[in-house]
Image 1 (cartoon, rainbow, N blue to C red):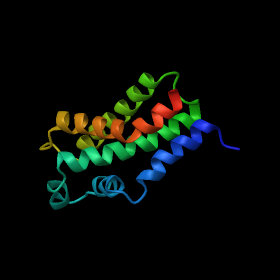
Image 2: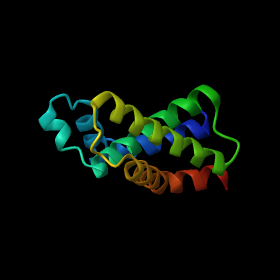
Image 3: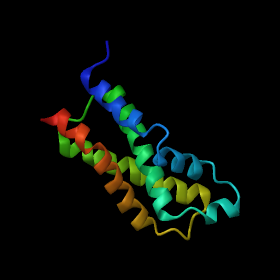
Length: 123
Protein backbone atom coordinates (compact mmCIF):
# COMPACT_ATOMS: atom_id res chain seq x y z
CA UNK A 1 0.00 0.00 0.00
CA UNK A 2 1.35 3.44 -0.96
CA UNK A 3 2.08 5.99 1.70
CA UNK A 4 -0.33 8.97 1.87
CA UNK A 5 2.35 11.46 0.80
CA UNK A 6 3.28 9.37 -2.22
CA UNK A 7 -0.36 9.11 -3.23
CA UNK A 8 -0.77 12.89 -2.97
CA UNK A 9 2.45 13.53 -4.90
CA UNK A 10 1.46 11.20 -7.70
CA UNK A 11 -1.73 13.25 -7.93
CA UNK A 12 0.25 16.41 -8.74
CA UNK A 13 2.16 14.82 -11.60
CA UNK A 14 -0.96 12.97 -12.73
CA UNK A 15 -2.74 16.34 -12.93
CA UNK A 16 -0.05 17.48 -15.37
CA UNK A 17 -0.38 14.44 -17.64
CA UNK A 18 -1.28 15.64 -21.17
CA UNK A 19 -1.10 19.24 -19.94
CA UNK A 20 0.50 22.22 -21.66
CA UNK A 21 3.39 21.84 -19.21
CA UNK A 22 3.99 18.25 -20.26
CA UNK A 23 3.88 19.30 -23.93
CA UNK A 24 6.32 22.13 -23.21
CA UNK A 25 8.60 19.66 -21.41
CA UNK A 26 8.65 17.39 -24.47
CA UNK A 27 9.27 20.37 -26.77
CA UNK A 28 12.21 21.65 -24.71
CA UNK A 29 13.82 18.28 -24.02
CA UNK A 30 13.53 17.19 -27.65
CA UNK A 31 14.69 20.48 -29.24
CA UNK A 32 17.68 19.64 -31.40
CA UNK A 33 17.77 21.90 -34.42
CA UNK A 34 18.46 25.64 -34.35
CA UNK A 35 14.93 26.25 -35.68
CA UNK A 36 13.42 24.39 -32.73
CA UNK A 37 15.69 26.14 -30.24
CA UNK A 38 14.72 29.55 -31.58
CA UNK A 39 11.06 28.84 -30.77
CA UNK A 40 11.75 28.12 -27.10
CA UNK A 41 10.59 31.17 -25.19
CA UNK A 42 11.21 31.61 -21.50
CA UNK A 43 7.50 30.83 -20.98
CA UNK A 44 7.85 27.44 -22.67
CA UNK A 45 11.02 26.74 -20.73
CA UNK A 46 9.29 27.73 -17.48
CA UNK A 47 6.36 25.41 -18.18
CA UNK A 48 8.75 22.56 -18.93
CA UNK A 49 10.71 23.28 -15.77
CA UNK A 50 7.53 23.22 -13.66
CA UNK A 51 6.71 19.80 -15.09
CA UNK A 52 10.25 18.59 -14.36
CA UNK A 53 9.93 19.93 -10.79
CA UNK A 54 6.81 17.79 -10.30
CA UNK A 55 8.65 14.71 -11.54
CA UNK A 56 11.74 15.33 -9.41
CA UNK A 57 9.69 16.15 -6.31
CA UNK A 58 7.83 12.85 -6.61
CA UNK A 59 11.10 10.97 -7.10
CA UNK A 60 12.59 12.73 -4.07
CA UNK A 61 9.58 11.89 -1.89
CA UNK A 62 9.59 8.26 -3.04
CA UNK A 63 13.30 7.90 -2.21
CA UNK A 64 13.50 10.06 0.94
CA UNK A 65 9.99 10.62 2.23
CA UNK A 66 8.29 13.96 2.16
CA UNK A 67 10.19 17.02 3.40
CA UNK A 68 9.81 18.05 7.05
CA UNK A 69 7.99 21.27 6.25
CA UNK A 70 5.95 23.07 3.64
CA UNK A 71 8.78 25.62 3.30
CA UNK A 72 11.34 22.87 2.61
CA UNK A 73 9.03 21.33 0.01
CA UNK A 74 8.76 24.70 -1.75
CA UNK A 75 12.56 25.09 -1.65
CA UNK A 76 12.98 21.69 -3.29
CA UNK A 77 10.45 22.51 -5.98
CA UNK A 78 12.23 25.80 -6.78
CA UNK A 79 15.60 24.05 -6.86
CA UNK A 80 14.34 21.29 -9.17
CA UNK A 81 12.86 23.80 -11.60
CA UNK A 82 15.97 26.03 -11.58
CA UNK A 83 18.25 23.04 -12.16
CA UNK A 84 16.19 22.06 -15.20
CA UNK A 85 16.42 25.59 -16.64
CA UNK A 86 20.20 25.61 -16.12
CA UNK A 87 20.59 22.17 -17.68
CA UNK A 88 18.49 23.05 -20.73
CA UNK A 89 20.25 26.36 -21.31
CA UNK A 90 23.61 24.62 -21.05
CA UNK A 91 22.86 21.48 -23.08
CA UNK A 92 20.58 23.02 -25.71
CA UNK A 93 22.62 26.16 -26.26
CA UNK A 94 19.72 28.42 -25.37
CA UNK A 95 21.85 31.49 -24.71
CA UNK A 96 19.19 33.92 -25.93
CA UNK A 97 16.72 32.99 -23.25
CA UNK A 98 16.49 35.16 -20.17
CA UNK A 99 17.37 32.44 -17.68
CA UNK A 100 16.59 34.56 -14.63
CA UNK A 101 13.07 35.21 -15.93
CA UNK A 102 12.64 31.55 -16.89
CA UNK A 103 13.76 30.40 -13.41
CA UNK A 104 11.43 32.86 -11.70
CA UNK A 105 8.47 31.89 -13.88
CA UNK A 106 9.23 28.17 -13.48
CA UNK A 107 9.35 28.36 -9.68
CA UNK A 108 6.17 30.46 -9.58
CA UNK A 109 4.34 28.07 -11.89
CA UNK A 110 5.47 24.97 -9.96
CA UNK A 111 4.54 26.55 -6.62
CA UNK A 112 1.10 27.54 -7.89
CA UNK A 113 0.46 24.04 -9.24
CA UNK A 114 1.66 22.29 -6.10
CA UNK A 115 0.25 24.63 -3.47
CA UNK A 116 -3.07 22.83 -3.00
CA UNK A 117 -1.30 19.51 -2.57
CA UNK A 118 1.38 20.91 -0.25
CA UNK A 119 -1.19 22.64 1.95
CA UNK A 120 -3.06 19.34 2.30
CA UNK A 121 0.17 17.54 3.19
CA UNK A 122 1.37 20.02 5.80
CA UNK A 123 -1.87 21.09 7.48
